[in-house]
Length: 272
Image 1 (cartoon, rainbow, N blue to C red):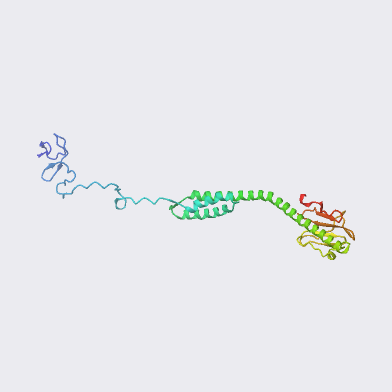
Image 2 (cartoon, one colour):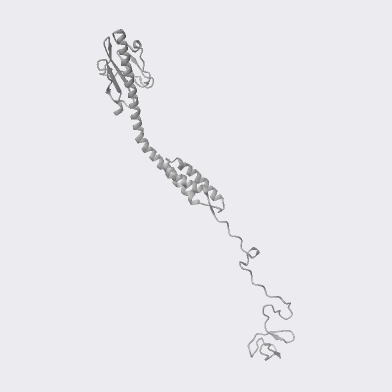
């Protein structure tokens, strides 16, 4: 019979447990019964193996080398994506010009982000730059259309007034030339050639004096309108200036005669 190593009770041969204390027993060669080997205690006939030390902090079973790979580098926001959104917003104030630049930079940034493998962020900024850039272009075109609708008629009117001012100056210059001619010859010149007068600054109006006329360099030619008369005599004359200063059917007509010596508007094309 064997003896329980825990309570020293006699144990019948072949028993796996002590009938007195209930300890688990291992039958060794020669009938020896002993407790199962604990950590670091070899079984009968086996070499001694010290218990394994606890794993160090951060150890993960199954990871290469026992430790997890380092965490990925933090995502970096693409500078081009941010620039595209800023340019697109500024495009609203620039008539859409910077909006076009913002859209181009946005497409470039979006392509770089997709190819970066997660290293670059800011995809939302790039998409926002493209979208806002498109909107800014449409807004710019709309604003430019409104500005053009307001400014072009005003510019044409101002341009017409400037042409009228030049014509009035030319007619006054003609009047002074006739006065000088009359003082020298006691009669008025019967043609522009005889007087030696030609409009020096005006290129838009046709001038009529009796049977003589001077057509403009730009525009024309013009005919003397109905019910508008011009003449030249020894002691009397009337000059007429005709033009179309805004390309509509209405003519612009100015006159002066020797009696009044003042420029008068017979038909004002700038208000029609």
